[in-house]
Image: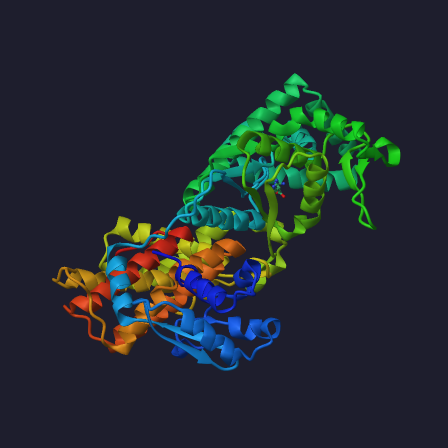
Length: 564
Ligand code: ARG
């Protein structure tokens, strides 16, 4: 399908240009757009150009509107184009066109793809090896996967990378803890939980005996210097931990093209430090550390510690260099917690100053913190809520929704449905919220058959599916629309390409979720009022609805269910 606001927008641009040759192409592009009308009663699109151009042209909006309308070609796709106060042109799609589009939608949903010779790198998850996955990691993992799927659906080539946190001072602490209190077979049985326990143990012990911090620092220094025994230990820990993490990735249906640890970039650190020093960008700070001045009254960025070990930031600058040299991406998107905004500001500034960025765009796709509606959960600190536990709890709670079906479904089928609904609820609970705001985690809102939730959407799909299964009619010939409810449903469905584009432009999957939720509401309303039975036209609507819902849910990482 085409992105209609863009397709029809071109006609408006040409008409405005013909009516007002004094406008520059830039002005036309900027002011002559097609947008969602305030009220769909007034049409499918509204062009605000007359209002916006009034000052520039020194004419009243109505005259501008009429002049543009006069230059618009006759086109079967719309049947009314009218001036509306205070300065809009409203356009209404024709029934012929809606029927033609519906026919296409009955066969499936796709969007005319984006063409570019450069890939987009989307970095997400950034889970830490030998540490349990935390709630903010769950958010980036789900959000990043969905954004990648969206980009790919829209025709982009995407390179998905998990920037695994497998390096850093915490490994000094962990190795100390494993050597002192760890048990190999306990760790191998339950790696990340055990690493977490040992890490917490280290911190409690270090509070009593600060000397431990020193020991840990020495171990990390030995690691950075390539000490063989310590490296062997580190290798084993990362391997065990990653295998454990992979179970969660599989369960979430998440995948990466590359899992590359921070350690991978270590070998480039010296070169970067030298480079920066040579150019006078990295200067000596307190106690022999190296810093980069961010300018103004911003805090300087620390790029090398006084003991000579590298930092998270150093490794990230190396990462930019490596990615740009290797893939020449159009852009690199970092899906990471808002708490790291300063870090990325520094990373991007340094990488640019060193000339590593070429013409790639670097973007921090940040998201808010998660707060828990559940009192017991919110009283625990965020870092003690384990992702494994959340997933288990979700599946258990999803069981309640399908309990009524227990008699109708074979046992294994029921278990599969519970797993899908549980995981889907968590994903949707995250993806349906505007990522830049703080996120709320509320079981009652996520796992319910009512309201903006995964179970409601999945249920709407399963219901549509059962309508189709019962019907015995083939969808041949052109569908014909007559009832206003049918017509409105198609009009709503034709907005999907634009919704996907907006979600991509803003990097916000919740825009898709909101659309799907509203579409399900309209569909359920239509279904409540219009008998479908064997009506070919209405069955066409059911089919089209299912294609869109399935497409949208798939982009949100949620598989549909034939029965629920
Ligand atoms: N491992 C980091 C953390 O847990 C996140 C990594 C984000 N990505 C990056 N390129 N720095 O906080």
